[in-house]
Length: 144
Image 1 (cartoon, rainbow, N blue to C red):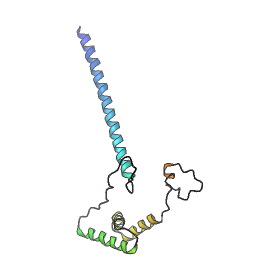
Image 2 (image 1 turned 120 degrees about the horizontal axis):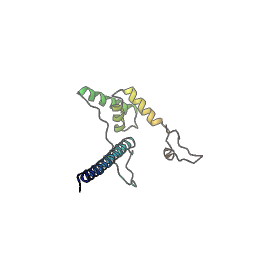
Image 3 (image 1 turned 45 degrees about the horizontal axis):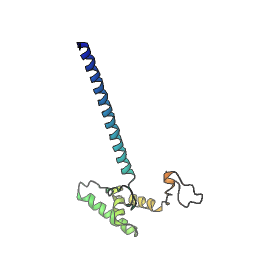
C-alpha cells in the first residue's frame, strides 16, 4: 500500500468514528429529553390515590414543604391550620396544612383555595381524554 492509500483508509476510519460519535450523542440527547418529559408528566399528573389495576405504580406524591427559617413561620402555619380546621369541620388536617403552606399561612387565601376546591363541579373523566360522547353526561366538560 502506498502512503496515499493509508491516508485514505485513515480518513475513512475517522469519518466512520465521527459518524458513530454523532449517532451516540443524538441518542443520549433524545434519552435525556424523554427522561425530562417523563419527570414533568409524573410531576403534573400525580394520581390522587393508588389504583389497584394500574400497570406502573407511582411512588407517594411528595409533600409540599415550606422552608421555615424560624419558629415563627412554623407557628403561623400551625395557627392557620387550626383556624382552617375550626372553620371547615369536614376538612382533613392534611388538606388544611397543604392549603396553609400554599397560601404561606394567609388564612383568607387558604380559605379561598379550599372554597374553590370544594365547590368545583366533578369533571367528566372521559372528557379529560377528549372522548365523551354522551349527550346526557352529568359531569362538567370544562377542563380548561
